[in-house]
Figure 1 (tube, rainbow over the protein chains, first blue to last red):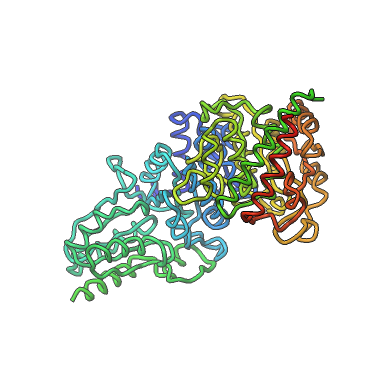
Figure 2: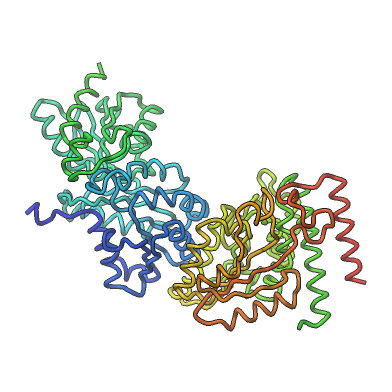
Length: 315
Length: 281
């Protein structure tokens, strides 16, 4: 059953664009020659007249998106995370962020799990870049269900949103009763010894880690943090106060991403140990995605070890 | 050909806008007078004669749009917007001041009449193309105008946008290039030549018109011609004089981004006042 539901969040993105198309009749979808990979091609197939291919020119695509949004047409603009957040950073900052326009950036192929394409395409810096833009909302959903809801929430949100999706198929974690809300973390399990806060692809690994820790007698609270900005400070402070130690898990550089966002909240309110699991300030490599996740320490074993380290730091 | 009354009226409006530029930059102790003065005539024509805009309804979804891609020439845009009635002319004196409405570069959120926030070169033309494209989805029928600097077109994004606008057949888009031939580090030819500008736009699939950017007849004719062009955007290459209208600023690169001192301010205002008096005589 789980295998049947295994889909990449980029697949969910393409499906979600189609699902919301009638709800937002002036919505336009842009891509930069990657529609087949980002899955905006799913939307293109159903609504060809509302899909514009900008070609391999990401900076201009963001400007086109800004102009469309300034003329009352909300936009989803897509490319790989590297070329959206990376190459077009300044266009996003100045043409979208500063005027706070209704542009949603659907960035796929984020992180190490891009796999064989290697370092030039494995963007582990996008959350850090986007976090520094005032007013930017950053969403990093964990599975198909959450992505569907995150895309709809992004469309309904007034202002820029950066959505981060993966290439790799992942298990569907959440049922139909799941409720995603921008700015809200979701507690998946309660716990008393340590809190694991995970985002995106690492939520599945964190669930496995929580179970492994329980088997060893360590009670871990687990929080899915799909919104990186604005970060849910309340749920972090509560976790810090009640469990006294935090582990973060993300498929992103440990500098500037979820770990940094959580540490900032913790340091300024309820100082407790924070141990970050993520890409350890290094570039990626080529290889099958699943092997790379192990090589770069992005798996449940590393979360378990980090949780033990965080618990030890409490004493 | 425009009649002499209309031409005189436009020249008076342009002269007053130039005084607004000098007033703003002098009071700010900074800013970009040279390029502001070279685009003044085009802006006066656009806002007073060409564009369907209403200062009492600056966000009208059906309005024509203007994007100042060379955003550093905001002093000229602000002066013409004030003249048109979007906000009091008194605001020009607080240009670039702390807490003032008029930012160093155009801010669409804070200033009535500004259609796009610009300042980082190369980005405005993309936004203008996006606005032009939007008429296919928002059910409106407006035109979009943008002014670029001749140095600005060294930015690669300008050519990404040029390729896009032609490929998507955006015939409601007009890009005007302020070819005053000077940029911060020298002449555009010396720094990194963009010439021949007209042939480049033509090669990208645009309808191209070369004009004298200070001749209202030629500005009027070029924009009228642009309205008749179907299936492609229009580029108007305007030969202009940087610092136009203030003798000591004309064709001087040093006035790209510096403000006049007290004596220079007085001289500039005297020259412009004399020109205005002559026009009004």
